[in-house]
Structure formats: structure tokens, C-alpha cells
Length: 386
Image 1 (tube, rainbow, N blue to C red):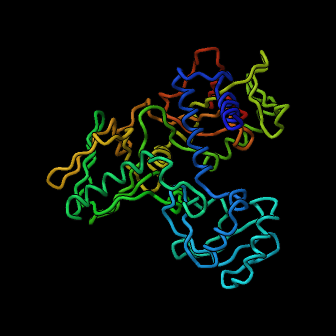
Image 2: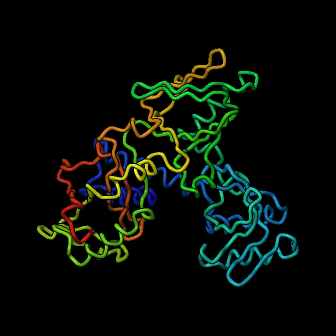
Image 3: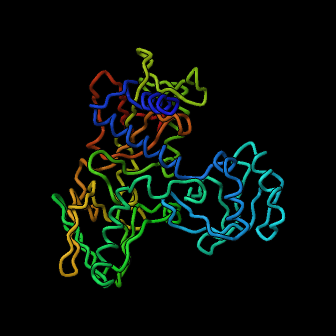
């Protein structure tokens, strides 16, 4: 019950009116996102899981066996040495295993531990949370369920295998939007840890004889464009500072009495919390190049929307036809309803207790139902943010 209570409490916290409702599609999407976060947390290594099974981690380390990296375990990381506090344990010193196990058990925080080694051959320093909890580290491997992206990757690679390992043409056929055709595809795989670190928008990559193509895969229903704590950090900083000072109309940011690190977004007129704050007409979002970066990323990903099932894939004569709900392959496919808008919402696990993203304009609920509160800020009319 402890996990269920934790999920319900966090779900309530993130809902705009504090009320959970399985029949509200917006609130249901929040719950689905939370479940993915909890699944991700379970899929990754932690200090707690190492303390439960220190021998498994130590054996892999001293054997120089590669650890899997990233949320799907696509990349390989060989650890040369482990730093725990002021102690350094080198993979070549196998006689120190008992000392390493003891150091793990005595460690107070995962922040005190650094893993130094080679990620796909490149010198890298990582923390424990970057390690995928594979079967030999106490994880459940692929039995956790296949994500939408993996469903697509597997379907494409299976089609290539069925085609006698001859490259295939992949054709995404949408109910809405242009066909997306990639010829001579010889392999599909997840974007990997390195790709996410480089802020790529694609979820998978199709490797072809001519060029590689990133594909951003979105499930049917509600989705985000991007998390923008870094690119628009100046706007977020002003929102926090000016909100705490009471310089934004109809808004005051106050410390939550039970969670001082969380700032509640309050309407000073009735002292009720806002669930969502929307900022429209933000100047940088009028820049077409910035919109391209938000939607398509540096890898110029093409977007396909679909919650895939087996019936969506059909291989004939070396052509894999894939049914999708919608395709977007360039900025000209975006409607006004697709354009990004700034979205801030309660999120206990984010800094200040506030999530900061861009979402499609069509998904912004300017007048929420069921008694929720949303504040809409016009950037052009808010000097405190400029």
C-alpha cells in the first residue's frame, strides 16, 4: 500500500485541482507519465539495490564486464575504477573486493559515488543512476514490458530479418500528414544514452545506405514537445524570482508548508493553488528556428504518432508499411494548434516543485473544467518576465 499511496499522493499533487479522476484524459495522461517515471526508477540501478546485491555489482566490475547504460540498456560502459567518498577502487585490484563491498554498504548517498570508465570507448564519468538494472544486477530485463519505441524497433528489425537480411524500405502511412519513406533501411535501434545526452529529439534511428534518420515516436493522445529548463532558463528564473516577489498579476509563489523546497503557485485573490500556469506569446517561440529545435531537435527527427500494435505492420516485396495516426516531417506540417506554448505545472520531483515544458497549443486548457485553476500569462503584457 505504501507505493500505491505514494502514487496517489503525487498524482493528486500534479492534478490542477488536486482531485484524481480516471475519466479525465488530462489527468489520466499525468498518471501514465508518472507510471513511466516509476518504471524508469525501477529499471535503473540505485545505491539501495547495490547494497542488497553488492557481490553482483563487484563481480561485474572486477571482471571488466560491460554494464548496460540508459533507460533501455542500449549502450555499454566498462568501469575502470569506482570512487566512493575519498576511496578509489580499481578494477585491476581484485583483492580489494571485500573493501569495495564494505564501502558500498557504508555509503550514505549515491551522490558520494562516481563510476569512471569508457562508454562505447569514450572516457566517461557516470553516477549509479545511469546504470541499467539488467538481470544479473537484480533487474527484470525485458519482462517489464515493451515500450512503444521498442515495439517499432523490433518490428523493423524483424522485417529486415524476414527479408533475408536485405535492407527494406520503411513507409509510414498516416491518417493525417505526409507519408514518410526511408529507403534501404538495414537496422533500427533506440537513440541511446549518448543521443539523449546530446538532446536529440528522436527516440529511434533508422540506419540506411544513404543516411541515418531519427524518428520521434509519440503515442496517441496527449504528448509534450520538450522540457525547457535549460534553453529557457532565463524565463524560468524570472518567473520564480518575480513570482515570489508578487510582481506577476494574479500570482504569488509561496513555500509549501509541508515541503519547503516546493513552491506553490497561488492565486492571491482567493488563496487557491494553480495547477497549471501557461505563458503565451513568449518572444523566443516566435522564432522559426527555435520552434524547429523544440519540435525536431538537432537531429531533425521526423515525427510519427501511434500507439503501435502488431496489426500496424505489413511487409510485402521488401517494403514495410507501417500505419500511423499522424506524421510530421517538417515545420510546414505544423498547424497553429501545434505551435509550442510554455506550460508550468506542479511536480514534486522537479526543482521548486514546478515542471517547465513546452506543449502543443491545442493541449493547453485555458479554461479547465471540474473546478481546476489555470493562470494564463501574456508575456507581452508582463514586464516582470521581460
